[in-house]
Image 1 (cartoon, one colour):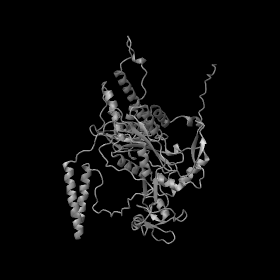
Image 2: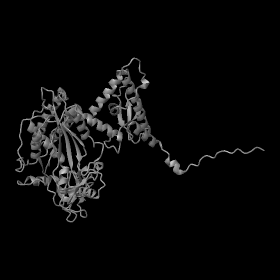
Image 3: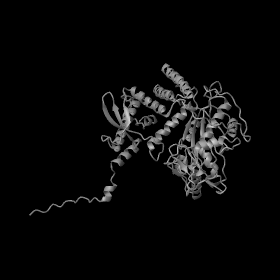
Length: 573
């Protein structure tokens, strides 16, 4: 009788063990994080009209927030840094990309202008049938102009009556500005020492004070710094801070307009918007060309903006008695009397009929820091470039994260004030003040708005964190990315690696009914494999072009440390 075979029983696998195992998505995200590619790709369908072949690719999500997608946020920051460097201390005017109008564009526009006059003649004669026929022809010509590449707004056949212009007389409490004729063709600054030095300027704009701020001791430096919370929350001017934050973009546009008039040339800028500890935004500005601090202070002190909106100092309706939508009247009505509320355009007409009317709000900048002169290619320029872009991968809420209870309460009170401050003529908050906003419908929520200005994680700051003038570098962000891709391709072509041309492919989003689309994890892994291949090709190309170190014997390539994924290669992926 043989002895029984004693084996080892397999280990028991529990449900917790199975849940702890990584799935396909986890593996794809881990590989994407390791290789520095997007893990939130958007499925796209690529159709080749030459071979009639259809394939699927993953397009990067292009998020600018590192908590959402670190790879895309990092690539966006590097592109912004390139854009900032290219335009800050340039010595030559950016290339003019405008094209001459074609004869076809002139002919179609001339025909439209002739029909424009005939349309108004027909309306004046009461011939509505002819006017409607001309209107249909003008609509066809508008489509043809767009197809010919004409940009800009075309003049409508029935323009709306213009509002009565408000007085442009300067306020008595602001100083006058020097005014020169602006040379729009000149964008570079003055060169010194026979062209050896051409400095540019770094400047910061902040909003005024709304109340005294508490200070605490920084444990790292030992210095007293602001923690952002007001000493007396009851006297702190939350209303003014909320309004100044919402209209900051208008104030900055006016500041740039005044600066160009003061210096007499077309000043170009690159600015980043960041929140201070108190929650108010401020702007760090890179200005091309050298401008004195005295002139910058003078322009800042003389710049202001009047907001000519209906006054919204006292709410008419509260949260428990908001206006209601009347389907018969097609507008919002009073909840008690059922009378229609004042429409936005009617409120503006009432304002135009009043001669001595104060603006709804006036905003100005506060005290400023000293201007810093920067030379191109210097260490100071590199420091300022990193300083200007240090928060681009973080959201406003992440920048304003705090462990202090009183600072959090301060942010909550500011957010509550923003909830009652209209952000635009289409804002639903206007219904709190008895005014129907533009474009209101039955879907409009009375007293509420989904705009960024009313969100707790933005505290009124604009969605765009970077602002730059049109002639800063003469290129857009996609143009800078295309330049980097062309550089990589040229480096590969020097060693005989020619990448296939994909410009003829038709890329469209994958529809919900497309059953042939692969899972997202497969697209992410394909992107990871493509990044590995790109890194290997680029490294081999650099090794082919790089001479070995000096010495008698040849150095094996196996002793050369492989290069990390370059900045150019990362952005080109």
